[in-house]
Length: 305
Image (cartoon, rainbow, N blue to C red; front, side, top):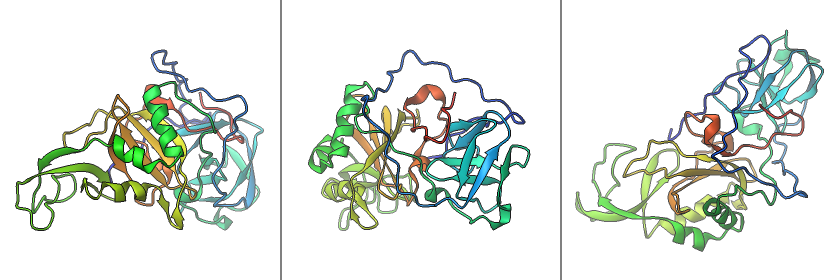
């Protein structure tokens, strides 16, 4: 897989208590228009049970694993709906919010655990960013506007292509681009990095097709919505640059797309996903200081520290 998951501490008063997130005064703060309200994705997994929380500082994560980022917290006395569980029965899904670790000492559920339906992470997606949200970074905000407007021509024009030697047998994902039919090994060709289930390259001739795929869902054309923005990891390479920022969007089914931008707001890599839910497109070692625009805290939850 192209990107690993974020690893963050878990909460709950019987676990390690989450450390409050330090304020990063060097990073711009996202702003939202006063009238804006978050728009949730379709409720893919409806509630089937209810839970009463009996512990403090219980983390709710965007997926059923400690590696997923915290999207909110629960406190003693909070009442939440439950949509199902993971296959191992270790995590419970809160509709349109996220996942909470299951422990009988931390919550009372009104149905037996094994009677709950088994869900996967793609069936529970939290709300997208509200209309009008900005990061305060002009280069990012300008590109977000292009995506929200589905301006495919402008996005294609913002893509930075480069020349590199192709290979007839590149040796799997992560290597040099495959030589087009009839092109000799070692020939210099102009390409752009695009990933689906595996990372690779597209030629400049096929770049418009790949940009269009970013706006195509299971049922046809899609209008993407913004999920989160963060500083890209330092694992840049000449063949597969990650740039300065990663912008994660989602289609109407909650499936993600990631756009990698350089410091000037140019597109340096596109990740179309592999039927991944948007939270799965967050990168490795995503510490709090790297957030530019955190995922929205669902209304059912208290904000994470």
